[in-house]
Every structure is written in structure tokens, then in C-alpha cells.
Image (cartoon, rainbow, N blue to C red):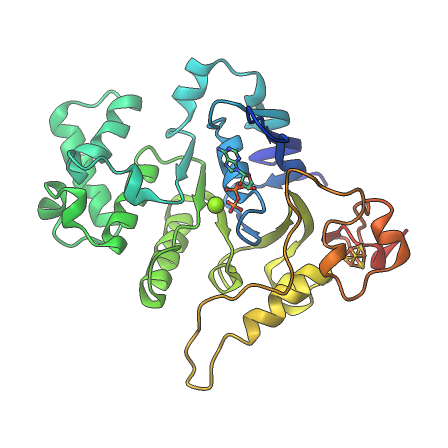
Length: 326
Ligand SMILES: Nc1ncnc2c1ncn2[C@@H]1O[C@H](COP(=O)(O)OP(=O)(O)O)[C@@H](O)[C@H]1O
Ligand code: SF4
Ligand SMILES: [Mg+2]
């Protein structure tokens, strides 16, 4: 039986066209569905196109970036939507927690006003109602003294507090889909798990679907229902969280998981996530074959000749690798 998807991304590509040099195809033919209330993790190294994908989903890309493909959200094709309708949808139905919210918080606006602006843009509330609603949101994201935080400027807040403000902003209008781009990126391990716990609670309480982006498998483990692994602009493997962590199929996913399991030091401390050997291809000049081929210890002749199609070795899994078919 076909599932009802909240969002269905079909063959989505994004190219940055620079004045000089080759165009960079940062996202290349990505297809992905997210069901209502589902948490999907996007896992991949820095530079593989995760933030570009996040921006593309909200149709929020810098000038010069060209996107093509389909993004069907609640039956609405976002690729054809006029800018005014996109503005009404962003923040209200799909919200983004950007990769670096510290930068996106305006230094001369207090946290309360900042969250209130999202409400003002989308909901017909009086000033008093808005203020009340902001305080409720601040409580919801874990502040026990909402009055104090309401009047605080970004520089008076810690990294963890700023991240909570960004989550309150994103959740202000109860969107159906929250896109969280590296939401724990600059936080220490304790704060990371607090933010993940908060996002779990949000899904539970409001049924929000979440697309969470991370370069670190440990962030996605135990939190995502499904994981899509991205490499050099493409998705190379999709499976349930248990499948991806328990039995990764793609050699790239396997390399990521090997490193993730070696990160627990003898003292039980999780060290900083290291890189796997070799470099991902320059997105400005991609060769024809499998993009992981130069780094893959299992490469075969065919791997450099053409890109592997999507194979379904098991009903719930997708993998792009010649080990699973020709
Ligand atoms: N505004 C931009 N202009 C040109 N190239 C960009 C821009 N933003 C990102 N890129 C390039 O697109 C690729 C993917 O970047 P990004 O989506 O930020 O990856 P990730 O979030 O996985 O680290 C990188 O090669 C990056 O240099
Ligand atoms: S297609 Fe070939 S090079 Fe690519 S991951 Fe699979 S085995 Fe390795
Ligand atoms: Mg990024």
C-alpha cells in the first residue's frame, strides 16, 4: 500500500553557477520521501551537499543557484510556487533551523521579539497574545525563566540557549516539517544530547516530521527512524536507522560506521568525529563512475565506468553500489 508522504522530493538537483570556474552541482538527482511524523536523518561528510539540500527544500538558495526537479509538499509543487506563496509557507508549514543560528540571530533584537516576529508574519495575534505565546514556546524548549530569556540579546545567551531559541522560532507556528541542519554542530556532548532529546519531545508532542542533517552518525543513532546517506551530492544508501547502523551495505556507509564505533576511547569519551581516508571528489569536476570509487577498497572494473543505479537488496533499503547488482 502506498504511504501518504508529507513531502516527496523527486530528482532534485542544485547547481551553483559561479562567474568564474566550473558550475558546482552540489545536489545531483536526489529523490526522497518523508512521511508525517517521521524523523529522517541525512548523513554525510562536510561538503557533500547537505545544507544545499536543506535550502532547496525551502526554496531558499543564494542567487546564482539553479534548482530543478520536484518537491511535492502536501500535494503542492513547491518548484512552481510563486515567491509570495513560498513566504507564507516557510516558517508556517516547513521551518528551517539553519546550520549556524548564532549568525542568523539578529544581535540587536531580543530573543522574545525574534520569536514573536515569526508569529507576526503568519498568525493574526494581538501583541499581548503574541507575547504570551512566545513565553509558552520558551517554556516548551526548556527555559524555566521565560521572562528573562524573552528580554535577552543573542550575545547574552550561551550556544545551547541560542540553539533552543532557534528551535522555538522554528516551532512557533507548529510546522508539519522541521528541517534541522546540524542542530548540534557546535555544542558539547551533553548539550548535543539535550537538543536531540528536545527534538524527540517535539515530534512526540506535536507530530512534527523532522529532517535532521548531520555529519556525525552518533547524533542520528537512536533518534532517526530512517537514514539517507549522502556522498558527493547524491544519496548512496537509504534504510531504517537500525539497518544503517546494524548492517550498513554501501562501502561508504560501512567506512563511516567503522569510524563511528572507533570513536569511543578507552575512557568511554566520544572523540571528535574524524574523516575517512581520501577525499571526496571536487564537485566542479565529477567523473562518470561511482563517486566513491577512488576511496573504495572494494572497487571493481565497472565502478569507474558508470554510476551504479539504485538497487533494492531488501524491500526497505536502497543502495547505489555494484556489489548489489549490475
Ligand atoms: N553559495 C555557494 N556558492 C557556490 N558553491 C557553494 C555555495 N554553497 C555551497 N557551495 C558548494 O556546494 C557544495 C556543497 O556544500 P554544502 O551544501 O554546504 O555541503 P554540506 O552542508 O554537506 O557541508 C560544496 O562544494 C560547497 O563548496
Ligand atoms: S560501486 Fe564500486 S566503487 Fe562504488 S562503492 Fe560500490 S564497490 Fe565501491
Ligand atoms: Mg552544511
